[in-house]
Image: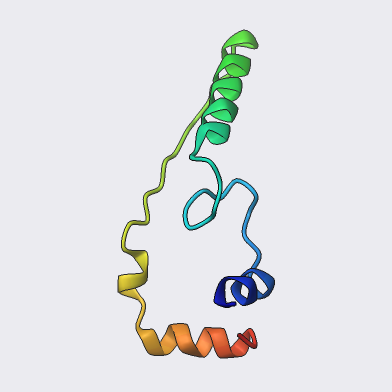
Amino acid sequence: IITSRLTKASPINQRQRGFVRLAGCSGNLKLLQLLIRNAKRHHRPLGVVFVDLAKAFYTVSHSHIIMALKQKSV
């Protein structure tokens, strides 16, 4: 029930792999390989950034999370 409500209140990007019921990150790896091949083929620079937000929720107080959920009618 909670997952359903959160999904409706705050849709996530289709490439999101954390906290969703999907097979690993193989799709994202294939996309990255395609981008690298394409950049090499066309002799173009390519910048890649990996962001790891491990324990990101520990930095936000529970009261702020609850307030945001109430604002989204969750």
